Every structure is written in structure tokens, then in C-alpha cells.
Image 1 (cartoon, one colour):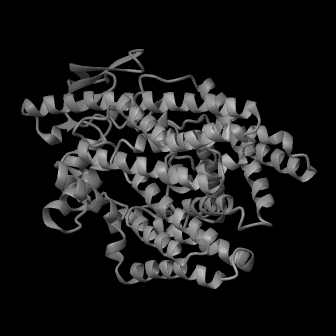
Image 2 (cartoon, helix red, strand yellow):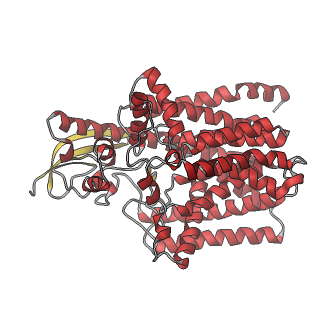
Image 3 (cartoon, one colour):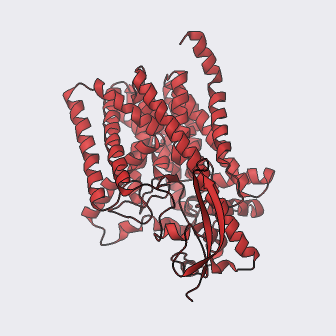
Length: 558
């Protein structure tokens, strides 16, 4: 490519990326004034803030959420109170995140054409893409985290304290969305490890993130109510570590399992980039490098074998559990988005469309081996980058972030596939630098993988909205015919939005639990024993190749 062509491409780069992102979102058709997954909790907190000026959250809300609430409240003030408006606010943050990711890749010296590919790989990451069409916390958190990392990257490279302080401001913004205090730790760790090799003024540059971390600790001790939304919901996530039966062998097993799951899921979600790491293998000629590759590949292959022996496979379905593997709540069957209606979420049925167990096992082994190889390539790249930390900040800083955040996962009582976005989004910055882009084969393979993952993310998210629109049409049909709220099992979202949100005590919340067809009316993907079908709301997806319906069921067995 000529120099003039490069300059033209550089000028058109961000408009082209944003145009592709906008077109993909429009293809999804993400309309419908209803909650998706957990975002009803976040919406209620936002609207409470709009009406009262105070942070008032539901008892089911776990993240601290205040930054996101303020952002959503601004949108609500200007455009009205609806889930469509809140979704639009997240879509804007997704676009801003792409700009920041692209600029960090530019800081790393990635050429424009490959920056476009890597930025789109970040956008079409199924977890990022799906969350961008909700009011969930992931995309706002990744935006604030990316802004913090951009500040630290510029601050350390240019030796400007102002950029470090700006990064710390966004660390504070991020900890009022999710577990953002961790964003202060990567620059602290890097500066402590490398000190004068990173900058002669290392004491000056380590001070802002240390002060930020201490500020968080002080607020945590003195103003705990500011740092979490619901005390009970927060403690629910780490209570297993206080149980007497949870001993050292179980702890080791859980830590290893959660770390490997996160690496595996990250490899899948960033498939267009992780595929490219395969082309780095011929360049690893040293014996120790080949030993690292073989060890990592074998470790993940053995892990896949152990999981398959326990009669489950990726993607982890809601009905199947093995070891510490949490049932997948983002990618399931050949679809995207948690199937939160009664019959699928409780394991009575599987989602209407899917693949065989054998195909899932094959996919699990293939992606597990890819995860092992990607991990090995990354580890070797870090070893190469370590002697020159200043020149390789764009590798070391994101990967330190990924390591620290992944290490925090065992605190949670379970790990879902979407957690790879919260903890390892930064891998999307480092992985492009592991790929030998000069090889035509690598560029072709990554482009094919990007197209495939983009088609999946767009059509699967479109399908998610299709069946949700059908589900809520069925729900409101019952309500408009006078059926009381507590006689309808419409799945997780109606329960959490209309009932659990106003339950006064934990005992009242437990009584409201949905599942197993305990109520007179049930919305489901398929008919259930003991019920008769009284209505059907058809939906279609994947360009009309998938057709199904949400069925309204009425109990007939008394």
C-alpha cells in the first residue's frame, strides 16, 4: 500500500468503523420497551434517581452502579423513560469504546488496515456486541476501564502526570459500575516491577494510582453503602469462602477451573484474533518455547477431556453442570443471549435450535487447544517484551490487567462466559500484537474468522430480540385480559422487574421464585406436561431460516 493510500485510509478509519458498527446495530433491530436479563435492576435504579435525586436500588442489584445510573438519568431526562432510551445510551458508549480501543492500537503502531480489523474484532466480540444492545453494566464498565487504561498508557509513555490523573478519574468512574478498583492495580504492578527501566520518575508516576487505590479502600471501610448496591446480594457472591466444607483441595480446583475457563472463553470471544496466534507457531524455534506451547495445549486438552467425561461440553447449557463450570448464560446452543424463560432456564427443554453433543465436544476440544496455544504465544511474547518495558507498554499493561482481573474471579461463587468481557477485554489490545500480520495467510484467516463471528453476533442478537418481543407480547396479552402478575410465570425478567423489585424482605423474595411451572400461566418455548397451549406468538430469525413461537400455557392438572 502506498503512503498516500495509508493516509487516506487513516482519515477514513474511524468513520468506516463507526458506520459498520451503526449498520450492524440497525440490522439487529434492538427495539422493544422491555428489560433484558438483569438490566431491569439497573433501569429501576436509574429511574429512581431521576424521580428522587437519590440512589435507590432493588434488593437484587449487586454492582455499585452509580456512574451508570447518572449516565442513564441524563438520557432519561432528555429522551424519556424507556428501556429503548437506556439501550441507546449503552450503544453510544460502545461506539466511544471502539474509538478508544482504536487509538490505543494506533499508539502501538498497528497500521490502519489492521487496526480496523482488530477494532471490529473487539466490537463483534459476542459478549461486547450483545451487551451493547442492553442496559447491562458490561459495556459502560469496559468504556470506563478503557479510558483509564488509555490515560495510564499515555501517562507512562509520555511521562505526563496529568494523563495518569485522568486515568485515575476513570478508575473511580469504573468502580461505581463494577469491580473497577482493580483498574488501578496494573500500572502500580508494572511500575513496581520495572521501576527506573520504565521511567526515572517512577515514584512520581506510581503515586496517583496508589492514592486512588487507597481512596477506594478508605471509602470501602468508611462508606460501604456507597460502594455496593445491595449488601445481601454482594455477600452472596463470595459466601462459599466462609463455608467449613470449602477446604484447600476444593479451593485449588476452583481457582484452576475458573482461570482456565476465563482463558478459554476469552479465546472464543476474541476468535478473529486468537486464530491469528496460530501463525506465530512457526516463528517459535527455541526449545523452551516449544515446550511452553506443548504444555499449555496439553493442559487445556486434558481439561476438555475431564469436562467431556462429566457429560458436558462447551457451550455450557443451563441444564448441565460439571465441576465448577457455571451454566453458560450468554452463548448457548447456536444462539446468543440467556434463554430466561421457564422451560429452558430450568432444564425442562433445550433452546429450540442447537447442535448435537458430539458437535459441542468437537468445538470444545478445538477451542481448548486454541486457548492453550494462544496462552503460550502470549506468555512467550511477554517474555520477549519484558527487557524493554517502555517500548512494550501496549503489551504489558493490558496483559497485566487481564492477569489481575482473572485472578480475582475465584472470589465469585460462579463464573459465567460473559465475565471474560469484564476481566479480559484488555486482551483485545494485546492479541493483535502477537499475530504475524505480514503473512498473507494470517490476514486471510483473521478476516474470515471476523466475518464469521460478525454474522453470528448480529444474527444471534437479532434472534434474541425476536423471541423477547414475542415473549413480552404474550405477557401483556395475559395482563390485558386481567390475569394478575403473580399468576404468570413469564421468566426471569418479568419476575425481577415487577415482583422481586418491590419485595420487602428476603423471605418475600424467596416466595416469588419462578420455575418448574408452579403458576397457573407459563410462557415457554415449547409445550409442557400438565399445561395446554392457549396462545402462540411466532417469531423468526437468521433471515427466516429459524421459525418458532413463544407459547402461552395454562395449567390443566389442577
